[in-house]
Length: 220
Image (cartoon, rainbow, N blue to C red; front, side):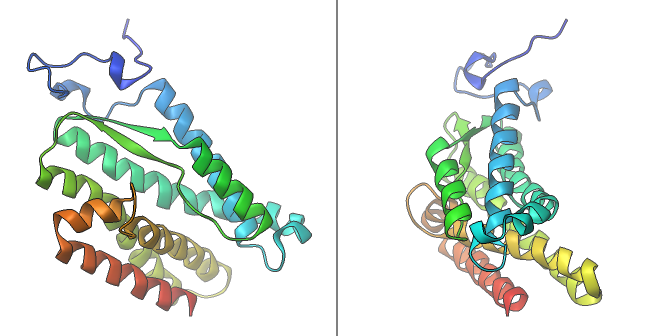
């Protein structure tokens, strides 16, 4: 019978004891991690459903409810794929990598989304256990925004290649990906942007420029 690990602190390490994982443990999720990912997806879905409702969010609750399926699809592609990138690349380098939600960030996102229509998206982050070098740490940090701008570009191409409701759906998804890339690239605090900026400024500038360009193309 396989053992269920509830956190990376409980998982077995290699003989070196430096937080590295064995090859057979790549791409694993703990039960606690899955629960926290689902909570974060749920909260962000509600927050963005209200944020993208025309007018004062609370004055159009029915509109916000109608936005839930679309917001869920956008958050699933943007937030979930972003965090998966961090997690899987961290594991590829041999480090335990698990998502941990930030409760205050989620509450703030929910409050602002419902009452102001603006979302401050700081739902949590993938925690890396071990001692990655500067190059590994930079790449692990950059992979999330890179996935977002790549998805935003793909969905934008689909948007301009289609019409009607299909175009609007893919445009919405493209914007969410571009926006989350831009937000996470801000060079402040614990965001990816600070880590990437300290690693390679040329990579940071390129990713930031692409995210701003995509936001401009999609929104305007």
